Length: 196
Image (cartoon, rainbow, N blue to C red; front, side):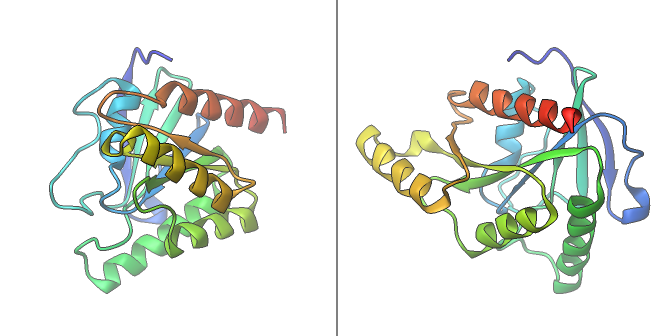
């Protein structure tokens, strides 16, 4: 899918500062060093839409990006070894859980996983939480260009077995592979949410 217009809409650091819901939303979650910003930029064809940094954990709060006037991508704060205080991470957790459990426009969540590492405890906990609140999700395997073809095939198969029945979509921000499949999953999730 070609994105014609992608623009920053709002940032929210507290529940009170969440923007009024309007368009369907897909949230993007993952570790601080998984390549969220790079993937968002690759998905939208806008190199500077989401801020990339050599220092993981730069996303503070929820970042809302409007896509072609029909949906919003929501960049969630990275988790893992983000160099933020315990109190700040606790506030993020409360904000993110409130958003995931109460946002009526939320049609689905992309859980980003570095294909070389596979899903770990945090990803399993997030998936379990999403199951508990009834939010659809897909695993997105990032940085597939970092593995040789045979190793990638074996690792992708291993991850897919581990996360079944959820789906796992391999992607690369470097060459754009898998991005169209992501858009197809998101469009289907939004259409399903609209029907319900």
